[in-house]
Amino acid sequence: MTDESRIKIEVNENIIDLNYWYKIVSDDSSGATSSFLGTTRNEFKGKGVERLEYETYKPMAIKEIEKICKTILNGFEGDIKKIGVVHRIGNVPVGESSILIVISSGHRKSSLEAVHYAIDTIKSTVPIWKKEFYTDGSENQWKGNCESCHFNNNNHPH
Amino acid sequence: MTDESRIKIEVNENIIDLNYWYKIVSDDSSGATSSFLGTTRNEFKGKGVERLEYETYKPMAIKEIEKICKTILNGFEGDIKKIGVVHRIGNVPVGESSILIVISSGHRKSSLEAVHYAIDTIKSTVPIWKKEFYTDGSENQWKGNCESCHFNNNNHPH
Amino acid sequence: MSNQLKVLLFAKVKEVLGKDSITIDLPIDKSTSFNLIQKLKDIYPQITSILEVSLLAINQEYISSDQDIAICPSDEIAIIPPVSGG
Amino acid sequence: MSNQLKVLLFAKVKEVLGKDSITIDLPIDKSTSFNLIQKLKDIYPQITSILEVSLLAINQEYISSDQDIAICPSDEIAIIPPVSGG
Image (cartoon, rainbow over all chains, first blue to last red; front, side):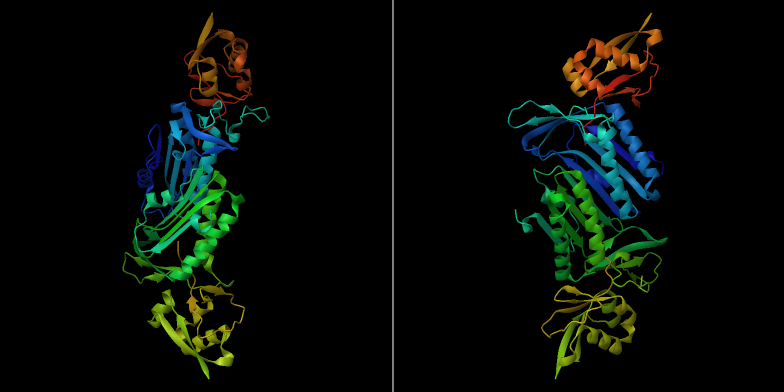
């Protein structure tokens, strides 16, 4: 199988369908499927959160996610079978999900570690941004992941 | 919430329902849900596998899984919200799943690590056994996880 | 006087002996985990190699293999071969 | 002679400037990433602090912040503030 046929990426406004993505990565030679689902929490540092709004530079976001997926296929002792990554854009209310990463592998260690690597790297390199809206009506905030501080100084705006 | 209300464990013959277990662990204060799904692979060391047959000492299995879940709730910086563990017993054909662990947490690191800890520990301590049936008709085999070698010698039977 | 100890069997041990439990007689003053395992090996040499890598569980708790524990007839006793869940 | 460079804007930069792209004029012999960022700071001081922590992407690839790269009008140029996906 080519790398391309083992990777499925989507960035869109749809609600994330868990079963669809598990089916995408299913493979008779896979004994393990590990996943990470990111969900809008109801609070940030004690402040009530109502929803997040995500924006993206879509063609570049897909390219960056592809790079991460290819790095994963080439690593982890060659044990990775298939990778699915979907990031939801637009409004994501509390309790709904913004990202799902699902990875199948021969043995458990590789997909468990690959999922961890994938979410850490996506958070640091993929051009997607979120704005947090608060229940107390205070001004909404653009967020910056600590992982994405491109410059090694401390004056990042978040 | 009591520990008990945050843990859900099942050991039975049913097909594992992904959506049900994700709903079980959903929580408005959770920003991350990590999971591990174990599936019957089509081969073991080059030999075609047709199915696995699982057997359990059920009351003890549930007790041992409970211990693991409580250890998880008490660790991981207190960031774990809810835990769901289901192990299927009986026949599990290739492509179907024998175990699902789903853990929700405030932040991603804790549930990612907790899932890894859970599957490693379940494989080493929970009284569940599998027998492998081969496509070439050769004699089926009781398996023993390497993690479960209770004695530090090398004459374990697998 | 002897204790009648019912022992639950699983997986390969159950398969080799062809039953899911057995009852073992031990003298009351010798009713301990070490003696139980020795008696099992004496009566059923065909499971000796599995017993070497198995643990006993008493009342659904593992017993450390280097500890000699007193056992009563009311205890739930089980032989736990190397597990392979997951 | 000057190059007209279209720059795509996202997130806070887009919000502060109130548009999703801007066009910057640079002399052809000064059409580089360093000069582009300097000019952006000169024209839009209100985004200077965000620019300090942002990266440029040219043709959908990040440009290292310590590298001065030549830019052509045909390039797709974007300012990438610290990302926050996931």
